[in-house]
Amino acid sequence: MTTRTESLLVRLLLLHEAATGYTNLSFAEVLEHARRWVSWIFERGHLEVIDPSSTVIEQKFPVRGRVPGGYGISFSGPPYPVYVRLVLPDIDDPDELRMAALYCDYLFAALQAAGYREELDRQARYDWLTGLGNRRALERRLKGGLPADWGVAFLDLDNLKRVNDTQGHLAGDQLLQRFADALRQAAFEAFRLGGDEFVVLLTRQQQAALLEAISHFQVSYGFAWADEDNCTNLLQRADQRMYAQKQHKKTGR
Amino acid sequence: MEDVTSEIIHDLGFGVVPNVFAYAKSTDTQIALWKAFRHVVLRGVLPRTVKEMMGVIISQTRGSRYAAEIHLHALMVQGLEAEILDALRRGVLIPTLPGRVQALLQFAQAAAVSPHPQLLIGLQAVGLSEVEIQEAVAVVGVFTLINNWTDMLEIPVDPL
Image 1 (tube, chains in turn orange, purple):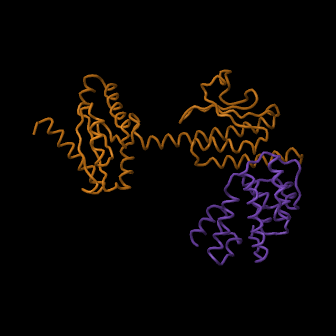
Image 2 (cartoon, one colour; image 1 turned 45 degrees about the horizontal axis):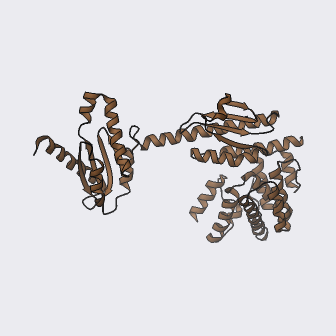
Image 3 (cartoon, rainbow over the protein chains, first blue to last red; image 1 turned 30 degrees about the horizontal axis):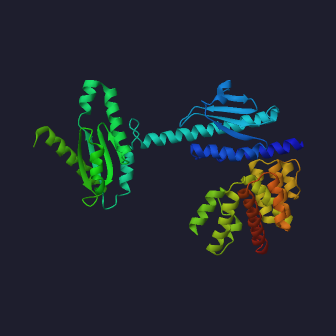
């Protein structure tokens, strides 16, 4: 065996170890892992993670392949687009080119897996329209229980249907987003259950601040507190109180 | 003991607890040996492949058979070529390996018999970080411990 082959085989083993190490890493961890391993596989190489909108990329770099001074891959996300360049002075050597291609292909697959895993996780936890936690996230949160002085506020936008009917669904979506923003800006832990229904977890002391935060919206609301019932029933209690308020608004009784 | 046993089987992936750990009659000793090996050799910042190569060199240099055989086998399973395995088996360093790998193997060979702060200079020269260098020192320590443990208790090499 040539001495060159011995070195290549060890580097291949290291490349394999780097690739198996990508399993279950987050997107950011994949990039960090790749950065750490690159110098084990390419003694004179290093990794650059470039914003694809940067002027460096203006030279029409390929989506995957050789670039000046190295090898590059373009990843479009999720979670966000990046251009990764393996800077390698020896890239003209066919062995180095092949190793670089392998390294970058493994990295691309790992970025794709981590990116889509995070996206799926995000979709499972967050409401796509408002970015607030969704019903499942609230259920998970309530399973952990609430401290004694905490409770839930059930909020229902009174005029969403009218806005949808008279101004269109885009206006309705914007109303939902503005309402979510108001809750977020007031730093409340808020969730959208669906439609026009929202839930906020809060302490009794935060009750006034919540009413202030939503004062510019037409909202019906009901509160229920942890010392009244278990977490599962709290939501139902708050919902009933919200509904009673809504009926009161409609009928005046 | 049950938790450690399943942890060893799961993390090593051999399906059994190797003799080096199975021979410990005290849970504390078994945990101490396992955690040291797990955190220094299986985890950490240096490639496991390189640490196993260091383990072979250290064990060969010290004349300890158990770890040398086990890790040679592990490297063979991973696909390391016969020529490199033979060199490691003889405790010989191959000068053409990648620079960092070469530096770590040289360090392991020297530190196995005569540990000295001067040996770290070679690791610094190839650009290894302080964390990586400390881990290399720990690798020597763990394999020396394993060598003493397996040699003095005459622990047999597992069927490979």
